[in-house]
Amino acid sequence: MPKLVLVRHGQSTWNEKNLFTGWVDVKLSEVGQKEAKRAGELLKEKKIVGDVLHTSKLSRAIQTANIALDSADQLYIPVKRSWRLNERHYGDLQGKDKAATLQQYGQEKFQTWRRSFDVPPPVISDDSEFSQIGDPRYREIDQAVLPRTESLKLVIDRLLPYWQDELAKDLLEGKTVFVFAHGNSLRALVKYLDNISDNEISGLNIPTGIPLVYELDDNLKPTKPAYYLDPEAAAAGAAAVASQGTKK
Ligand SMILES: O=C(O)[C@@H](CO)OP(=O)(O)O
Image (cartoon, rainbow, N blue to C red):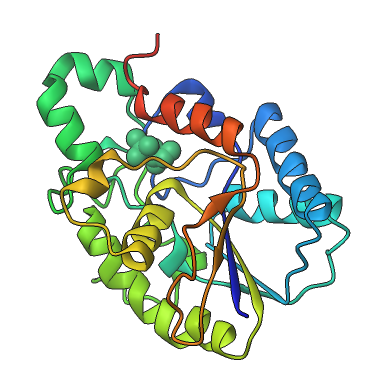
């Protein structure tokens, strides 16, 4: 039976500072490194062994995967990386403080930018210090179509080809597939897998560093609700993500 394990990277230095991050390539904080180790320990405890690992092109997801696989004694598994698993591009909000943004623009706009389905934040300019134009890791993408901002809808649009060409392909071979990615790229995948409506997805938050397991049938439909390997920590972690911005 194919199994899909989704892991959001551990806390990053910009999660710690409460800054909008998106495609900015920040590293894990010390807390994030511990979360990554714990993710690997949970996989080991529950005897979940991956056949293949997929990550985004961002260091925080790659670091989380490396640390987790190390603590799970699974550093050997083959790896594929794609920009299609990257965090949602946060446009001109990248690098901005969440609490200050909430104060400046008000709750409604802040929440629309963070969690609406199809309203992207303002576009980032190519000469911003937080733009990804010219970053060599994205040289395979036409610079004209490299994201300058994204809604969740746009993330789904760029993620689904990767689901079809890579993730579903591995799963249909009966593999246990690990995906180490980001809050919003994983929300996009969960929306698709669980058929969550455009409205309801706004209430879904993914906690850092806790594996979420999907057991799938041969048509890649979940055979039962997906489950976190540490449900209590997951609930607390999701609530903490939801309240970002209100945090001082
Ligand atoms: O800043 C970001 O890139 C994301 C994830 O950390 O934040 P949010 O949860 O506000 O979408």
